[in-house]
Length: 306
Length: 248
Image 1 (cartoon, each protein chain N blue to C red):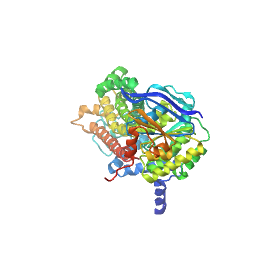
Image 2 (image 1 turned 30 degrees about the horizontal axis):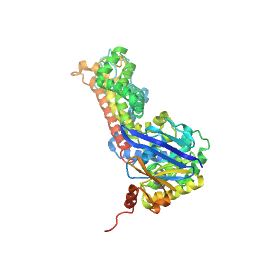
Image 3 (image 1 turned 120 degrees about the horizontal axis):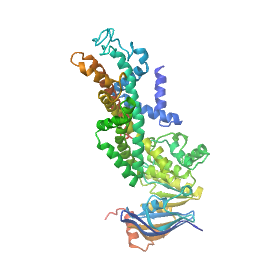
Image 4 (image 1 turned 120 degrees about the vertical axis):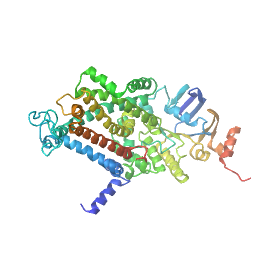
């Protein structure tokens, strides 16, 4: 592509008189992308997350050994080497392979929690904020009750009640992580519900349902995306914590938190068993945090009127 | 001629504060009627009460022969539309002009959307080039034109105007007022217009009501106001204030 075509494409995207719906939307996305990509650290965060997704998708190709079946006779607790990059654990399983497969479970937890918790929080918050009165009071007191419990303790209680396992851990984390989203969505809703543009839609005869869904939710979504992304690290750590306590993923599932838990016993002599999954959690959490910070700069509705 | 809007003893109360204290008013069909008064006199509240945006405590509002209840139905909104004061706050920040204009059509299930949007933009003097812009890509005057287009797209018979030009600078003000005049003549609309600017009211309206502290002070014709043939002291003060500072 020559420099001129790139230049003309940029002009097309940044045009202040877009000729179609698509151009208007792309132009807006491009402006957000430019603001996002100006932040180097955010790009690093995004690369880490893309790498995580790629590793999870290509786990079968990337992992040289099985994640669940080890060589008990010859390969127990081997130090990192060319054959086993991150060493092996007490059951003779290759830690590198387990971490690669573990990426799938990490993504599984994070995505499921996000798609369960974020919509619940968004719905509760916007409805409470827009309806006001009794609806608001009841919904927000329920939210307060959930917020009053320490997150991990509440998750522990749920998992204890539902039974250990990664699905129940996801459910428990989702149940404990929606209240802050409801708070954010409600706060955003309160700032816009009395604005003239919402009044104008009311004067069109729009139903409250339509106003919340099509006019208020789009305004809350960017702050919610930012908050969810920043919470991802916390979700991973909670899932790892539950795994560590034996209430999350069950053996032989290669979940990073559970891997640290099993490496704890030999942490002084065979440090790599716990260190490798620990480093993986650290890097992915860092990636989500950097990405979240970048998204805040790019999407924040209060920075400019984009 | 029948009354487009008839209001009897209207009271609006916000948390014990009486914003309107028994105001009565009659606007004839096809007429342009002005409401003047200082800030806080209740003129905007009167407009919002008609639109259903202010809590009515007592009194009746009759629009085109139909007495309104607590809630407004869809046919009401096809008859009555409003243009807000602040063009910077009345357009959704995340929607293109196209989306803004489509919304009322979608709500009322009107089929020929494409044509209506193009016609509405033409009517307010904005070409096709503005159709896919966001509010932040428009100037104040252009935004107000979009707001007018949005109000007109449902083809109402009554337009409520809440200081439609007070946020705009003088030259743009004149353009928007001329546009409103033109639209009214072409569509035979009834205007109920709020302003604190007596010059605009005398230019735009045939009759007007002066308001103070939530009460009607007096009802005048534009020519009475121009000729200073007023009976109340308050109106006289208002007229003097509108002449601006006089060098002593």
